[in-house]
Image 1 (tube, helix red, strand yellow):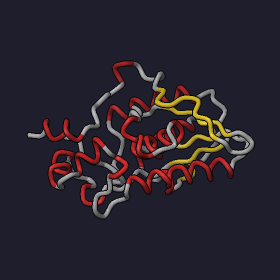
Image 2 (image 1 turned 180 degrees about the vertical axis):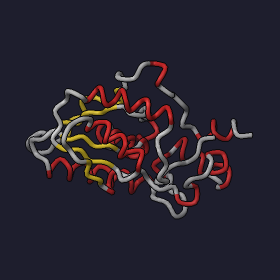
Image 3 (image 1 turned 120 degrees about the horizontal axis):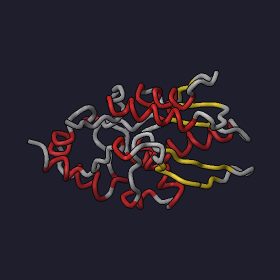
Image 4 (image 1 turned 90 degrees about the vertical axis):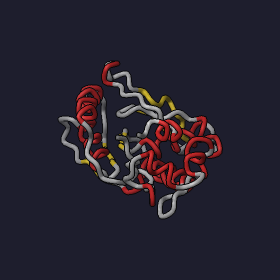
Length: 206
């Protein structure tokens, strides 16, 4: 049963632990000056895998955390999207308007992740930084970099677990997205593709 994890602090799955082994190997010979992470355990463990055998500590950053789902936080997708009229439609068709009661509106997360990444870049000029975050805010970040319009968020694909993106900032801190959703370090049998459509979740909940 899949749940709306959001900011719920759940550990990585058995598959996730295996994926992190491949991620660690991918970064084993990549120069890194500093590593940041969302404070949630699944992100921290991802950051630790990136650190590998280096003598680096992971610095947690609240700005990298996943958006909080409010009234649907921690609930099964089927229950969450059947409980509130219009919520599934927003999630599937105009995610920029996703704003469950008591949670973080998607529009806020869109601005928050961008401000966080820009601050990290400015605080570490000339350095190579790794940052571990979550699917929802990463999607917002990719939308900002590609479209610069949150209303295009629906057109942005989700990243697979442990997928890597590379952003380069020039001397004026103008960002260039080199690539995203690169999970070439994962053997095909370790790629767990799942639809993120609310309609799919509703239709398969019995």
